[in-house]
Image (cartoon, rainbow, N blue to C red; front, side):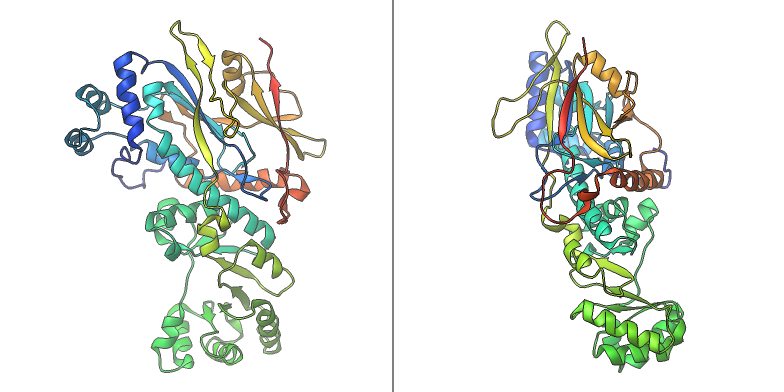
Length: 454
């Protein structure tokens, strides 16, 4: 870990499914547990109508991977419940992931079949990580994909995350991080702010106004406590009177007013006119109230300065998962040779063999293709690590995340979030211009295959 401020965490080893441990038990018994394997994480399709996805949660996954240890309590419970036999318990007592992980940099856009994470190690090492990997990446990427559509619709106006009360308490923390990765300017969630250095926001709810005998007293109290630059919630009673009282309490230097109900577009125009007439030209208008990317886009012509988003964001705006899967694509045979493997199913297609990935760019630097690089396992592995001949129009997408079980510096903690924010901004700017439209369509770029020669 590079972020020493992160508090010690409990074991994450039981955040998994039972069948991962029972597969391990059988593999230990038949001698296949030590076979070298390659697992890939990808999604077969984007949610209906979406043109791209956004990878998020990689840094968070690397943080919890370091806590994937079976301690005395976990082993005792497994023994009491007879989940696995004594030999497997002995293996789990010394478990440490010692393999390698490469993947897309957090914040990168992805498409169907994009190998966003590649885990290589023994079968025993890698199979145990399936549920942990998918639970983190599916949720965080769903939130980030929704957040990217929202920040894209908002253009240059800031979006603020405030969905903690609409999610599980731990999911809310992860959602705040994912939203910031995809361009949100801050979060109301204090734990997310503490853990990753995210900007935190928040002033007062309707309850504070209702606590006082009248609106004047409530606004005066908030201004005394927080200063004139605070944000006053003006729609508890009558909006026009609320704005008048807000200006009376804070003067024309009032930081912002917030609208949380009604026809936000109409109200924003009326409030802007009222503020300007009073000389409060610098007072911003913040709007909340069940916003999503479509509502944000509809407010593009309204004099709104900031959007606060909650429920739609933390639930993926209708797509609460990305449908990512964790599939074995290559494994060592009895002779020690790596062989491609794939499930045979028309409904759940996958392509066997290790894959690297790159994005083909046109002369203007716009993405035109997602390229899956296939071929002999050793050559693809080298190419994936940046050691192959890369055509000038291809941008390799895989980066080293874990080497020999050690997390690579720069992907976790506060630094990891900052890097992910920058990567998402650059990746989204690289997409074709039509990729950011909210109307339903196919993936923004097609996915093709390029085979390396033997």
